[in-house]
Length: 228
Image 1 (spheres, one colour):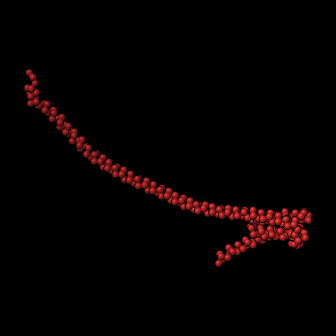
Image 2: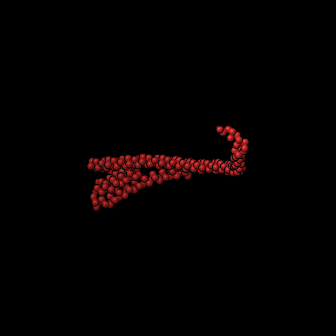
Image 3: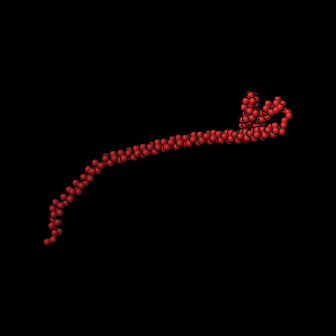
């Protein structure tokens, strides 16, 4: 219930503040013209009232500035136009002056309303832009978080792959070294008897050849076969 009443209270206070500001500013301008008019001149009230209407149009809105214009016109007729302290008996000159004042005030109010609408459009566009920027910022944060997660995952996969390759290399190299060690041991154990056997065979071959060449039968057979 409090959340329903607070916006209406804010709207009512804003409404009262806008109209109150315009009326107070117009009254202060008329009072200043009333006090300083005899010292400076009869045109001072117009000089003071126009800026008040412009400020009301620019900052308070269309309604407050229209009310300020009507109040200023009534105050000018009542205090600064003869016959004084009455709203009747308007001459042609006074009517033309009041009409010119209304036209000038209307132009000021129209310009102020255009400015307010442009500002309203700009604020709306700024709000939409801020919303889009905030949304894109959130999306960018999500994308960056996803990229960081993907980078961390890739680094983890690379580390796992390095460890796997290192284990495979370690196992394969260890197996190869073990196989080579076994083969070297076998070759070392079998090499010495084989070399000894080869030496014995070579000795036997050389001794056989010597026996054959030194025997009498070989000598006789060699002599008989020689030409006479």
